Image 1 (cartoon, one colour):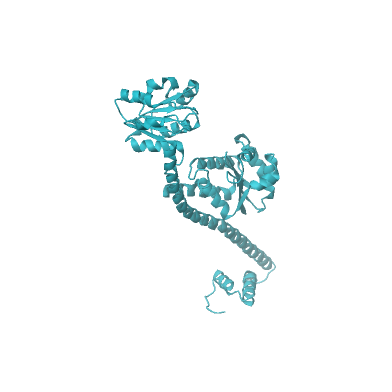
Image 2: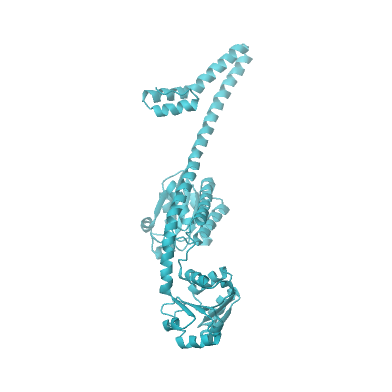
Length: 420
């Protein structure tokens, strides 16, 4: 039974081609069923915006039928697909799965979202009924290894996105960030991610200011926050302990004059401000004001780069963990061959036994003495059982394969010998 992992990611294919190759959620079940029918295989399909991967267990080690099926299913140029694919076999396939699950193969090293996506893909394959025992064990091993990497290394402990870095920096400054009043300026994807990180930290008081109030209301409604327009900022900024801005405005939204008035109303109670917009949302001179702590996107990039270095160190430790998990999985996979061999050997021996017993019973029915029948049964059964091992011993001896000879001797329970 072979194990294959083949697919494409952000390193091997353009975003345009990845979009074409991605299998939508509504088509995953059909894809899994067709793949099993066409390639006689068990499979799991992981398809996200950054990768499409097929994990396949079958008796055929040739990936060509799978590649041809994928090209046809997704209407892809077959040569372009081949040029974009990586293919891993056996231990490298399970290694790749673990690295993906642990976030070691992601655009952002150590990002945690991919593990949930892999688990979803596994659940879909189980629901369709195409996963099979090999992939079942493979993915369970992958999840356990990913958890071990997360708990035993610091791969996910340091902020490496601008949004996460902004919130992490705020946590350093406020003893209890959950009690802070937050003003988010903008309603785009980055601000939405900032809001998510703030909610994860227990922050409950969030205001959203945006040029289009409807978008602000849409975002604020997700966490029972308050939505305001940019024109209302002077009235609400004095309430904010934390201000994070990320708009597409070509000009600053908050100037030094506005913040001077805000600080007067706050009686110089400190304000933490993060400007992650390019161009700036907050004038640089605001940082000169007393009790205003202003950080720019460049400040955050320095933090992110430092944290990325920590993650890369953690990734080195993670690779050692992965090596151990791969070795354990491959040992289990090899043991399946042993189980099959034992089963076939036992069946063969039982067949020989039944055959000789049947002949012995026939001899008894024809009046032969029980002593003669038992003697012949023992003689013939013994000869049949020792025939193949004797041939193997002779062959190993003639060829001078003494290591193999010793293995056979041990298997037969023969007394150990130092020379042959």
